[in-house]
Amino acid sequence: MLSGSAQTCFIASATLLAACVGGSVAADRGNGQKIAERWCTGCHVVSPQQQQGSDQIPTFAQIRRSDRFDDQSLSTFLAAQHNSRMPNFSLTRSEIADLVAYIKAHGR
Image (cartoon, rainbow, N blue to C red; front, top):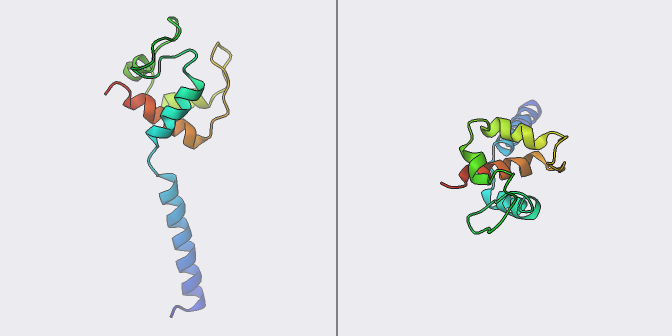
């Protein structure tokens, strides 16, 4: 049986550990694909099965191969407000991570 202060310390440690582990959960590429199919197919080619997209917009495969976008810069871009033809989406951090994981796995 733990004393009151030991029990409090244990609970605090367990809570901190859960918060750290929860923040490092792997992105869900399947959910990223669903997001891409819902929001991105109007302009981007998001999968090899997609037959058309805009010819002036990079495909997800081209974005994946681009030196301009690593995981962090792509996440930052997707989270930012856009003043271009790219619409502003209200994606959560988790959704952005999922979408980035899908884009980065594209064409592998």
